[in-house]
Amino acid sequence: MSSPLLVLGAGQRCGSTLLQRLISSHPDAFIWGEQRGHLANILEAVEGLRGHNEQRGWGGRDEFAKQGYQGFMANLMPEQAVVDEAFEAFCTRLFAAEGARVWGFKEVRYDLRFAEALRRYLPGTRVIFVVRDPRSVLCSLDEWEQTDWWTRAKTQATINNWQRIAASFQQETALPVLTLRYEDYTADPAGTARRVGAFAGLDPAGFDLSVFDRKVHNLGAEGHRDLREWSELPLALRALLYDEPIRLAAKAYDYWIY
Image (cartoon, rainbow, N blue to C red; front, side, top):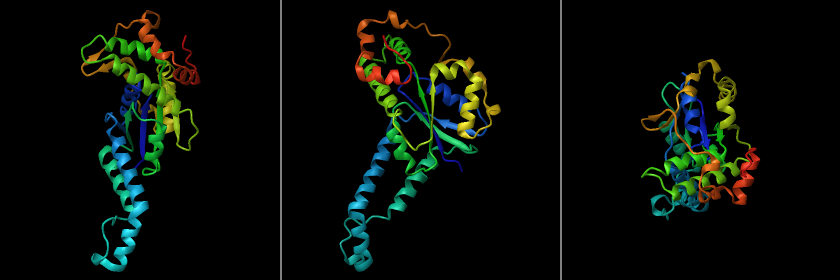
């Protein structure tokens, strides 16, 4: 069975769902959706168990080997390999879709550090990182703010995620990562299919490129969206992208914010 392929986006409205749809159109692949970051909480708990095991578990095992149940069993833990295998089995059972040789999930809250930590338990983990011009992201979020379910605080949180995640993927890593800019991969669907196929070990001919023709942007919502241009946004909204850290992160992907 294949190891997972993660589709990680630089926050919401970056195009990760379109890429998820493209990969899932392949007969040999399936990519599950977001978990609102909850898997990171589980991974953090597993990492905590690892630390506890390294500090105290070995003593409990040594004591039990000598004294059995008559010894001090308070911190007795299974061998670390058992803990690691249990988490690997959990992830595999949860995300390894039946019949899919390439499987995984997409998320817009996880950065490179998360992917590297997950790879300790799933050694074959690969990542496709999707980034989009933060000005376009903000224009999309501006439309959401006109609804009664999205707030300026959520927009700010999304922009913060963009900066954190985009900056993290500028760091050196041993993790196999394919970085795709939304503007580039949507401009050349056939080329994107070839790049993704080569990276994921999938025949590019198996992708259904018609996913690029159908714009799906929420549950039951598709088609054209009437968005304001960057220059039309209120100054208070554009100001979210004027801080130096996000301008530097954007520049690294050739997005120049003026």
